[in-house]
Image (cartoon, rainbow, N blue to C red; front, side):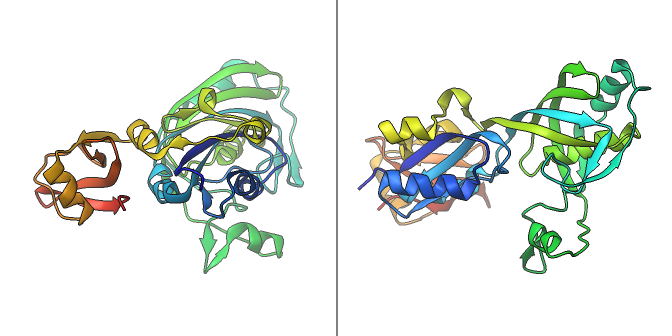
Length: 284
């Protein structure tokens, strides 16, 4: 049986996240594979997958920050806020100058209220928003708080600009493209997106599906937990308490991975009510 752990994939374009999961299930020889946050088919880059017991880590990893490189086209708005949608408006951009574009982009850094793109996977009355849009419904989503830690304009080429973004989970880069275009009065959409990091896992850690097909391996669950969370090494008595899900008399900094003396990853604990309490126990 394949070891429990994470697989960091460099997702190619034109594949859904589910396509990648299906491919990794075949390579791993197990149905128990899931992903930490989807990537649109047009997007490439870091997609973190969990195998076997590590699938239970994914919900916690989804809360971590992410980083992207993206290309935004100004002057053209689309139904999906990216290049795969139908064009809804075209506006000349000849009057825009680079300084104006850079100044407007700087306004999208910090704590923001962002309206997700209508073709997102957010559920509306039990159905994904993108499904409702495909069925011809008008979908209006409520604004959500997100944080953009950094947005760097790396190049401006006429009506196109390249940006690098570090942001909280739940931030839509397509929505930034849409809103930047609206701020400049010309509309805009995303033409390319590459995710460069999910939490501590970056492109340098990622492998292509072809490489995984030649030599499949996972990042063991213990190493994955140490990379993604604060860690604490227990003595034998503490490890026994954890195996039974008991509270620990520890002062933890936040969500923390706890380990047995032999290095086995046992659980995620968090500070609550003056003690450390189990969030998820992974030990057998």
